[in-house]
Amino acid sequence: MKRRVELGLLHSRSGSYALMSKASLTGALAAIDAVNADAGLPVYFTSVQRDPCGNADAYGPLCEEILRDSSARHVVGCVTSLSRKEVIPSLEKLDGTLWYPLPYEGFEASDRVIYTHACPNQHLLPLLDWAMPAHGRRVYLTGSNYIWGWEINRLARMTIVEAGGVVLGERYLPIGATDVERMIDEIRVSCPDFVLNSLVGASSYAFLRAYHALSLTDPRFTPERCPMLSCNLTECEFPPLGAAAEGLISAGPYFRGISGWQGQIDFGSSHEAASYGAVTELARLLAHHGPGSEHLPLAQLLAGAGGMVDAGTHHTRLPVIIAQVRNGAFEVIQNRGIVVGDPFLSRDVGTAATPLRVVS
Image 1 (cartoon, rainbow, N blue to C red):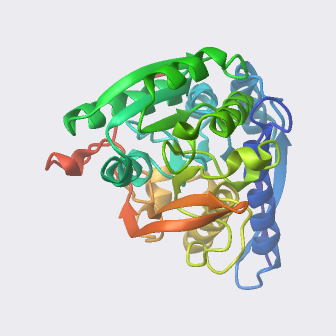
Image 2 (cartoon, rainbow, N blue to C red):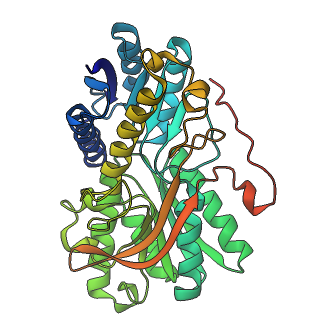
């Protein structure tokens, strides 16, 4: 007999980054169906869903509502790093855990969060390590004006300068803003070797469309001459881009059609795959520990259970793949194999990773 376990799902179905959020929700729902249909697992998930509608201020209260008004102790969701940080006080207050399935900027290891997508040593650093020898070290940086954009560009700037390169420009837009003309003008004048795009959602789509238009009138900005790079754009965001996605180079743990991560299921994007992995790994842990284990502290839930989550940092081992959009689909440029998540980049300086709690 399967035991019923309520599972919180916190995803925006509207707003400027809805495509990413819907992809994450699709993966979580597919995993719930798979767990519930698996006779070998003693767990039956029922979802408790809330929709913040892309409003960052709504994530914390809705997470608290899930934990207060249901028996769910685990929540899968959030898209932006801002929304992740907004829910941590609710998790601490009501003894919950967030499974966060989106790429993020690193330098965090909360005892209330499990990170099932990539951090910088699994996306940004391999991407720059490939791009600078291939294209050059004169770089233009863009980003959304919050922690993801700030931290990704800070780390990129440090890495580029240490490699003898130069950052020609660095511009930010508020989340959802689409006024990209100044960025495009600066890129036209500075003529970098490549552009690192850390914009999110609608801002990123407007920027990519404008950059594609620039490439049609000026051959200096074709993908061959000055490619666009990203650590967070996946296939789920192709619809609003159309031809503007062509030539985009991205780093991530999965691209559509590549088998090996999370089994042989053909996911629509890495966002789906990371959410699917979060739900199935939770089911495995609950099966391992037995009835009532959904209420265990996270340290106890992970202890002695093996699996995909590092008990010290709450990050995962992931494939590191660099791919480029060609004829409407990502094609692998380089596969670096499995890399252990190192959120503090401690292995680069020869020290052990030290888990930190997020101060709320």
